[in-house]
Image 1 (cartoon, helix red, strand yellow):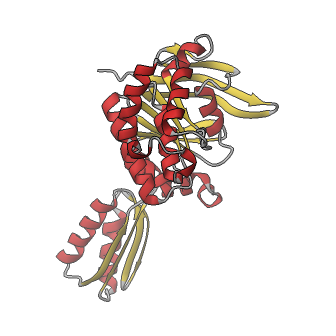
Image 2: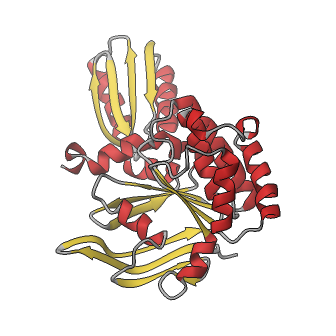
Image 3: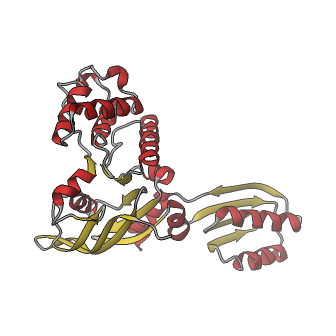
Amino acid sequence: MCAHYEITLNDVSKTFGKKIALDKMSLKIKKGSIFGLIGPNGAGKSTLTSLLATLSLPDGGTVTISDLDVISQVKQVRKKIGITFQGLSIFTTGTAWDNLLIAGKMNDMNTSKIKDRGEYLLKEFNLNQVSNDLVGTYSGGMKRKLDIAISLLHKPEVLFLDEPTTGLDPESRNILWQIISNISDREGTTIFVTTHYLEELNNVATDIALINNGKILDVGTPKELINKLAADHIEIHFSNLNSSMIQKLDEYVSNLVEVVNYTIKPRSLIMIGSKGQQIISKLLEFLIRNEVEIEFSELKQATLNDVYLANFTEKGAK
């Protein structure tokens, strides 16, 4: 069965003066997915998010959200989406309920629906006990929770999150993502997120796109991108090897297709490659079979941070 795509871009371009912000970009985002967008500053993340959120228009190409055209059907599109910006967009001089009522009325919801949906969201985000307190008394994490809850008030089919956990401590970030993931699973909401906390995407994203210079470089699951674009690091220390055993080990390692690079010394083997767990298992089995005394072994598996460093830094670009 073919996947249903919530967001589709075909040859989308956007320029600001002489600067090309989006360069004939094509992209498809599956319905119900948590889709992460990563790239350096100036890569086109904000431009793409702004365009999808109907805050700007493309210069060329087509964009559809929930099968609606973002140019000719902008009013209908806006009813389908929710947006949480990096900066808070809540009224700190009112209560959580004041904020929910204002947002609900702006989305043409009647008071009864606002109350029912608001009670559900306040409970999900663990804000029900403070819902009548002034938002100005909230912690940063509580304010962010309320901001996202308001974006979900009208049950959007797509939720755009721009750096949603900036400034939050690790525990608060984990709790927030657990809530968002649960709501996405339960309601089938498509989540589109940009973040600099790449470890978050590793834990929650179903798909990730790498963007730079207005182009999509690659798309895949976190695991696919890590296996394809980054490398695991393996280090094994053992008893002193004689020259014949070093040669034998060298021949064995050179035939492992997953290995990108390696160095063998009389007392150590250091290598980088994909599928690190499989490689280290094979190596340890080989060494034990050849009666090599193993003193220490370590596998450092690649992460999305390694993908970022390999693709978006001067060192990685060389």
